[in-house]
Length: 106
Image (tube, rainbow, N blue to C red):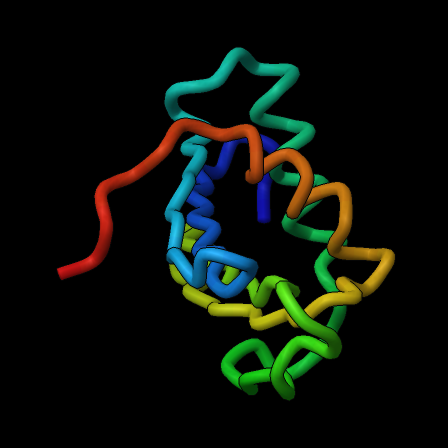
C-alpha cells in the first residue's frame, strides 16, 4: 500500500453489557496527511491472520467482539477479534473506537 493510497476502515463493535452493535469509521481522504499516514501504518500492522476467519466468542461476561473492515484500493479484508484483542491490533482498535459514528447496517 503506497503512502498516498486511500484507505477506508470501519470498526463494528458488538457485545458488551447492552449487546449493542456500534459502527465507526475513518477515511484517509478526510484526514490530515499525518493522521492519514498513521492510519495506513496501523492497518499495515494488523496481525497476519486469515482476515475473514471469525474468532471464538469473547471470553468472559460483557466482553466485546470487533470486526475491522479495511478497504484499500484492490485490498478488501475483514479482520475479526475477540477480547482480549491481540497487541498488534490494539492501537487501531483504540483509534477507531474514537472515530465518528456510522449508521447501522441494514
